[in-house]
Length: 238
Ligand code: ATP
Image (cartoon, rainbow, N blue to C red):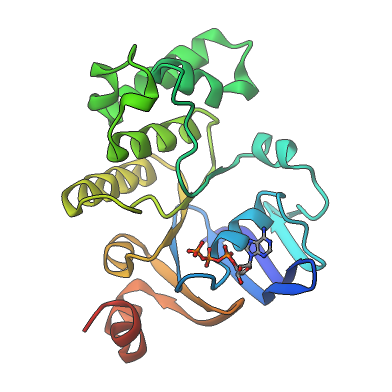
């Protein structure tokens, strides 16, 4: 297995508050890796640190063997790491198509690529196709999440990082989104998935990391984590 992304002893702060404490994790090409943990554990900060929005105070982040520390966020996007943040952040006044076009800003001169990317999104999410000319603000929560994921795909990610795609959605929509994340992975995109819905995440992922107050306290294959007492008690609601 080829290592794609490797964090070693990463420390990230907000002012004096240490949000990541010697955090190390690794993602191999082709995997779906779940990052689990409760509110405030440091999951979003991990993604923000990888995408360059939070600069680590110390530690190393290697992407395809190159250091990402100090690289500006737009360069990180261009290198193939796309972050779909929590809360979707779509542009409600723009149509679905316009939102997708914005996701392709790195390719804005390549009209053919943009057109094909939009077609690919519509194949994955037919609901978006039916609503292509509708303002994105009129979409349901689940559809907005689909749009946020599609917009991320428009940047042609090698690694797609999803921050709580299931948040606030009905179980049936969560299932649909998880199925499509699997499909995106099958088509060749590596995925780092943040989830409070540990059950859904561990069903999908190959491996998982459990984070508590900025520390990775456990990591293993999803099959092992699903059977772990601590995980079951704290996160699988047994
Ligand atoms: P959630 O699921 O609730 O978003 P999380 O695991 O993603 O939780 P983070 O958002 O990474 O957690 O937060 C980690 C810690 O850093 C928390 O203690 C949080 O209060 C703090 N924190 C996060 N963002 C900021 C910020 N912009 N300024 C100051 N502290 C912050």
